[in-house]
Length: 301
Image (cartoon, rainbow, N blue to C red; front, top):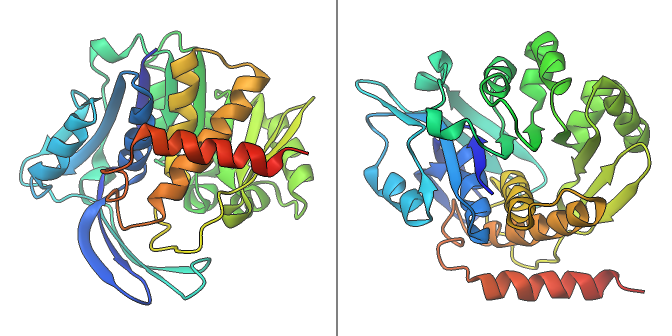
């Protein structure tokens, strides 16, 4: 089954206590697409870059089997750039700069070949853009959406309209609290379900993720790592791996959703071990399966 991922494709500058990298491949769409590509399904990516975006990055995405017909390169335009700095514990990140550039005026029109997509993931993007994509895909089997605090604060009305149209909303713990005004995550999730989705998945960083529906609860642990290099994009990797697995089995039952969360957790764990998508370049699927089995054993009792 095909997967359509719509999200940002950026040039990131990331600083940690030990190293700084500049203009590396980043963005919610890029991270999610690379993660989804591990499962062998057709992955279609929609986004926009400027003429300054390195062809080596687009070449890499294509080597992963990612269809870039939906990628727009704006001549004389500058790519989205983001810069962030982490503290020693990696749970605190300061945004140093955000330059939207070509993203600010991006209004994607899907290629006809993308409109039959079965699995649609709306990675972090303006909610109006997300809604426009939903309206262009006539009959998806599953629509999953991510968001962030900026859109909750700045575009709440548009975000609410988007949330009404999705099957699953993915967001982190602080965003769930901000969206609902609830300090308790279970209460926050129940409130979000009333907004329209059938399921809410709340990411909790190093503490894993939880899934809540009206009739089920599931908690997926994070994969334990001693060496954290750069957590940028881990949440997008989680979501991309989640979508990749579901499309590979073409099943959205409760059992498949839980397995997909575990695979998403595992793929995110590799992302954290290096900057940008550098670790994913060398990851073999046998390594993903090995960590998946480790997590299975860790929660068996």
